[in-house]
Length: 417
Ligand SMILES: [Zn+2]
Image 1 (cartoon, rainbow, N blue to C red):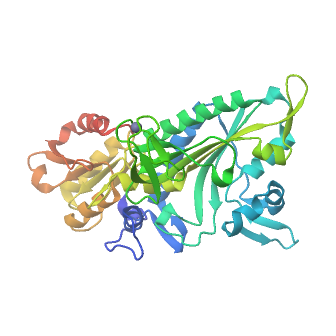
Image 2 (cartoon, rainbow, N blue to C red; image 1 turned 135 degrees about the horizontal axis):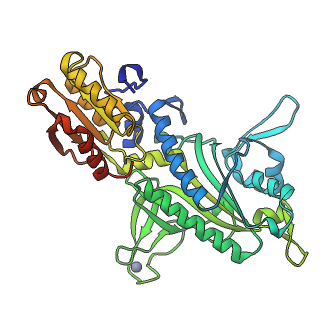
Image 3 (cartoon, protein in one colour; image 1 turned 120 degrees about the horizontal axis):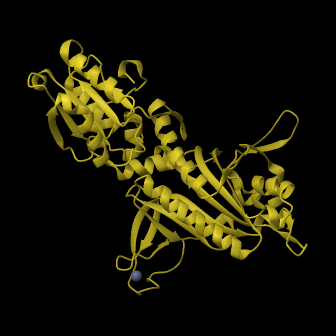
């Protein structure tokens, strides 16, 4: 992609109301724009990041044996009234009636909907176990939307639901999802802790949260330095149950929450199946949420410096940015040659704008592409070009004819593409 053809509206100023690094950098880097408080547009760079994250999630979920589907965002309130959660969820849910007077809502979550689907389509133990997931837009009428994508009214989540014949099956599905989540967050380059949690509104029994450690996080995790035990602050305990040391409090962003629901929904909504003995039983369910749009913010909170974002390579919207410091002549010719020789192997962004070098350097650091290739007339006189690794700031000067092999090894050093 050529910068002059791309839509990357970067800003110099910190946007009004931005209280966190991720919010400020996403807006300044031209990744998102606010439409109204709590509602955001993903610009092309932000959309690419989102897609890269979703790709990793899909690969790992599919590898676990889960199957993707897409439930509707528009839901009948009736199902929420039946499950008893309509009152409980209160004003967080957007409710309205359509022209025929049907009472609808915009889904803040999908337990009722998937349970209804299971009730109408799962009849026998032979169809179990089953794990279904979706990546879907969800809605919450937040009192105080803030921190950009961290607390917004419209957001993207990955939610999965497991269906089993018995508790033993649920435990296996739960373990499988827990391991899958850990793999996903690791691939996303996140530093996180897994904590025992309070199931809250979701109900059911055992529950765990995945927390990305970040000063900007609104959640508090209680953590034992010595044995790494961690627990949600909603669980009342002041000492580590393993080594009885006192627990330290750290800020974190909730990026995943998984629950053993048991028969909480299948019981009330009568989602039953026939077991191997021919007896009718409620499905044993688990549910597994992951905040996809919020993950973007969590990654930035953990990967930034005073100059901008530092994307992990697999998430980055482009893998390499080429910076010719002149728009014409040999500098541009060499840049174009490099672009053409690398474009089959890497997603490239070429900043061929007619701008000062300083502006190009600032923007390249701001948007956080892992590797910069800088082509200047000064170095070209010696047939050399310069590489800059965004994360470390390390610079390497190399012969311009060695570019292909050097780039390939440098990219391997930086991390998986
Ligand atoms: Zn401990």
